[in-house]
Image 1 (tube, rainbow, N blue to C red):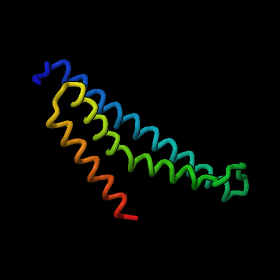
Image 2 (cartoon, one colour):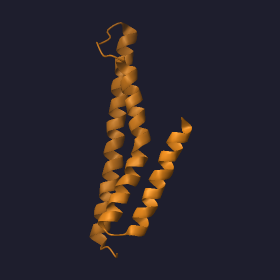
Image 3 (cartoon, rainbow, N blue to C red):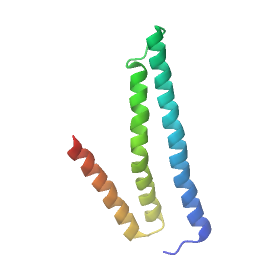
Image 4 (cartoon, rainbow, N blue to C red):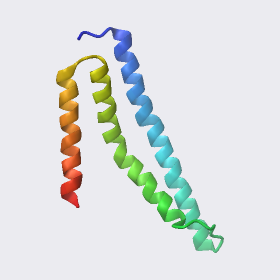
Amino acid sequence: MKQSIPAIEKNDRLIAGLLGYGTWVASTIIAAGMALMALDQLGHGLAFPQGGFGLLKAGVALFILLPVARVALLACMFLRDRDFLFAGLSAFVLAVMGVGVLLAR
């Protein structure tokens, strides 16, 4: 289905927001993990179960999940616009990513 220019710009802003805010959140989580790890090295560790390393791993995992979230968002946008060809292609890409994760184990 043919979209108008403002609708395309709205979709672009949503994707940019997801990637931009996701990057900031992941970076903040990694920085907090690094700060907690530094405090542990100085002997001022806080009572967290995994310390800063758990936060560091969570931030890296979020960075890894951002492209997957982008493809999922695109699939939802294509479905909303009734563009079933590109929605199907996006679903295929998500499936390939999922198979890749399963085979990597």
